[in-house]
Amino acid sequence: MVDVQTETIERYLREGKITPDLEVPFGDKRSFKYFKEATVESYAKQYGWELINPANMKDKFMDMVRTMDMSFSYKPVLLKAMLEYVDDKGRVRVEDMVNYFMDFYRARKESGLVVEKKSSLYCNDGYTRKDVERNIFSNPFKRFEDMRFMSRCRDIEYVEFNQHVWKRLTQGEKDWIVGRCDEKLEGYFRKRC
Image (tube, rainbow, N blue to C red; front, side, top):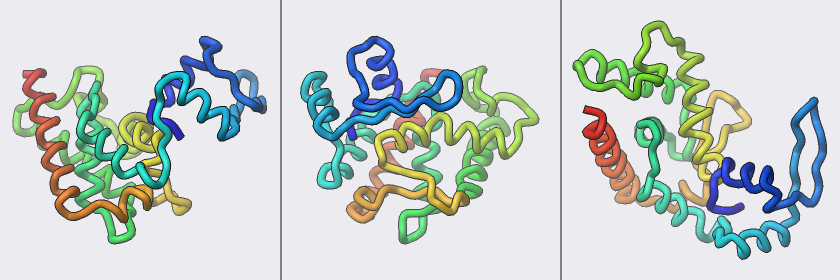
């Protein structure tokens, strides 16, 4: 509901800056934390967070693309993959995303370009499709999912853009996103060379 990442929320919970209205333990060390809408609104006001709602979701998504903080090159690759293979309903097959990632990093390697940071799985040989899928969902996808811009479909073969984002994106904006991703990738890899 707010425009901050899960890690920020988790840190604020650990530091006691925010407290859930209800906490339900599961397993040994984990729990589900629930917040009433009024509580979220109060914390958002206190910490200067903006609420994400259907009316502003597309704008928040475009802001995220515009600023696109990157530790790795994965976010722009994810967006390019999704826009390459998206159907008219905003859905993308997970298999197509995995193929796009594998092809993107393989092409860089075969061209003698910097593939990624040395710690990236794409710099190694022998990674599997499952490794790539795990990487996609743990790194770039999670960031967009945390903000509710994307989600995994009930049919787990697909992911999808949030309909409040997808239905409002014009073709010109989709083209701009691809161009922005290209700019971010160029800048990212220029720093690595």
